[in-house]
Image (cartoon, rainbow, N blue to C red):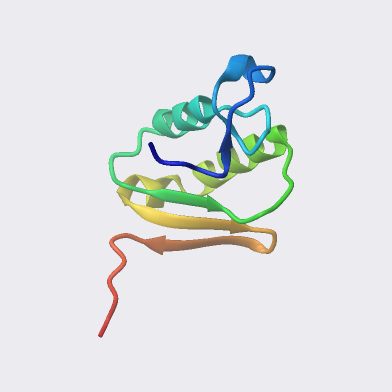
Length: 96
């Protein structure tokens, strides 16, 4: 079975459901929020900010999804950093 260092489980937290890095934000909740966006194509949202509280992470994800919803629905890679949001459309093609 694959191991994901950012996904943790603790029987005393959130009924033992897998959570994002020991936060009270379950993996299920993140996936449900992304599924509700109605995206038809593959997309990636990468959060590159350390030490966010669960509520801050959820708020940031919802802002990024709202801000980039058209791009995400057609397939994009979004990186949220402390300085802003970067967007690249998919598929990413490496030129030789």
